[in-house]
Length: 433
Image 1: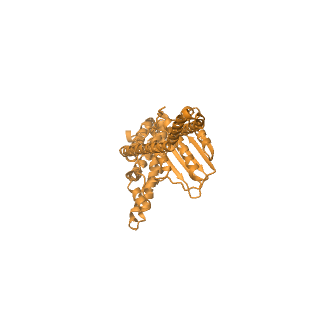
Image 2: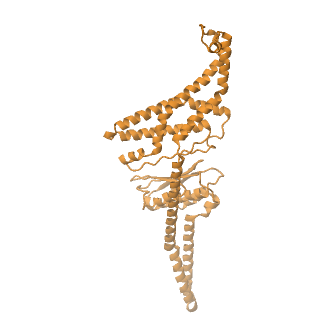
Image 3: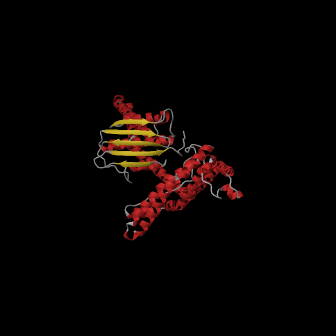
């Protein structure tokens, strides 16, 4: 879902003065935008349709729709800025495939065609609104100040507002009528501007938004996130089970065997039981260390107690590859638990992959946050060739990020460097501490 901007982001309710001047700028700026949008839409559509027979029309139409999409974005932002209210959401389908298939996918997006239709229909509307705005304000101001210029106009028999109303010719009467008319136009200008803005914003709301499609896309996205969460949870449990089986469980079995041997030796030869006790103690310590390492990978206490920065510093210190860590988070402010857990998981899994597979000598971790998102970037100077596809280790990272509607990008050309970038949104992620 895209296009929904909370009112708080737009600056809150507007004053009467702000509403007037923003609306005035919105209406005056509509003329150049209308001309550009109309020319691009009509010329691009005509050229695209006319050359479809030689396949050249496909990229022309796709480019035209993309340009109309950009101008639709400008119109949405302008309407929200002028009214101080967010428009309903809209939704664009993600293009799929490559080559001609991708072009057809772009042409199959309903919202893109609604954008093109808006560019055409809005042209006469914006032109009319520009004319009304200029005439009502500039003409009203000129009429209100008619006393300063009426005397300089040559007088013929007939003509003028006063003559039309009374049939008589009078300079003072003409000045009075013009002044009253100008004052009326200036007094009603805020209402006229507000009505014109509402009309133009209503046209944008009707063609440039589609709440039903956006909600359907949101529902599909949430369903995908739910499936990703289930898959990521199942993968985590399988890995945890494998790690416990290969590590602590084997050591505990060995510890049990050693203790049984100690029990047999205590009666007949206590001295020979002593090294077995020492070995059993060593096995228990190693099993305890492995269990602690596994618990740190799931939910380290330092993350819950001290936050993301110290937890990442501890993880970087444990990595066998040299790590340069730069964490820039709001001072004295904790992120939502789901965000911190996801960011920690991304960094620790990335460091594990770097240590196991990259052959790198240096890894750089940068974590930044703003009002909308947390950005995690892990860069290493290894051999490259990392792939986020299904069956690769990075697929689990993508699934984990999908549970919080995050995104993963991996750039890893052969020979390196590998740059992993994870974006974790903050809006809509609750804090369950």
